[in-house]
Image (cartoon, rainbow over all chains, first blue to last red; front, side, top):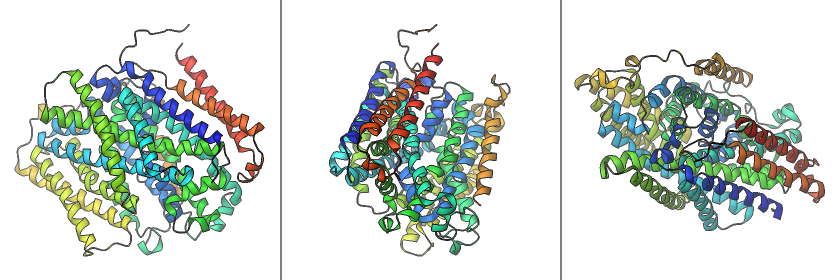
Length: 532
Length: 75
């Protein structure tokens, strides 16, 4: 692999810009709300792209190309059924409560709606989840740089972690969001030539189809039976596990993405944030699944047993120096935006939901700002430590879906009941959340000792999510009937039936959330039909 | 007429289109220069297309549009 001076020059310029943005924003960060929520002042197109990019970490880019090579167009389900419906739902139905109640974080909503204990469970489990996730980003990045530039693992880890630390330390969430927008454009424009060159080389879509195994270009037609497709899942598990529980659990409750919408400047901007993000999300399969399919068709030998490296291998094959630097920068950008998203969510939840709530309440705002900055340093250090732990695991994708099925799947049941059923009680929510999480752990242990068996790890993850969700849902309802609900007047603005509808939004019809959601939903259905 | 809001109110929106425009203009220029004067042998990888030149021009266009929009936006 030849990397020239021009490639290094492009990478160096990127680093300078990223640091420069953080540095330029440092004077704008005066209060803790500036640091953690960007002073709630950002236009929706920016928060929308950041919403999308915070989720564009290592998993999204490298992992989905790998999935494309392994499972074919079934991978598109992670977007079309596993993201879009949930993103529309959070924008239309849930954002009014998140943004309208002026909470600073997702756990804080749980405190207002239920009680301190429910918030505590969520804050702690979320803090653990985020640092484990951000370690994966650092590790994946170090892996690519070792492969392509021959840098040592330690040097790659220290460099990437150091840059993320500096820009968040100075600019807080604003800096993270701005860099995410920059990274979004770099990822899209840096990886697009790969799909174009690959398609040209394969002889267009028909040429590609001729070189692929049967069924690789279909999303639904192979889902009738688990044995008919490489993922080992039938449509029920796909729709309920991925499309409903895992997807809604992630997009509707994961503070990493919600935090971007909370930084928006008004209610309409906050509601439009996930809807704007849904547009590029809908089209992303062409940027990630397609190169994975192309890798199967064009470089089958190099790919043998190396699915995780499908993307870097394709870059090596098709990108000459110059463009290669841009391609590497795009990868770098994806890892950094993924990691920064985790670190900013971690420092906010730690500072507001753990430190301010349980360790030191009633300190000055300046103290919490200072704490946020210190937590950024600690968060990055823990991420580096987890990167070295993650290094010992062989399969990162399964590990990540495993974490989601533990934490996010039951949480979504808690939110659904909390927002749409006013009778749900504080202790109902608490016991549901705890038993849902324990159910996921128990289910996992049963698969480890092989009492329960699934055709693939992914199928096991989907079903574990369904069980965890159902148990949380059921336990919350049952316990709620035996415990005391909160007074209705305390729940105004937090529960659907007790909150006045938003009537006039003061924006033209084509900018209204409902209109955007209908258009995006229709386009997604059309894409599903085309690639049936 | 440009309204310069000075005194940097905390949390006020700084135009993100400026850094985006600058970085794409810079990357585009480097790729175009490299595509025009660099070695041509490297393009057998990209199916004999001088991808640096063409994609660099696209970057320049995108960067330019971003910079123009940021000028407009602030007036």
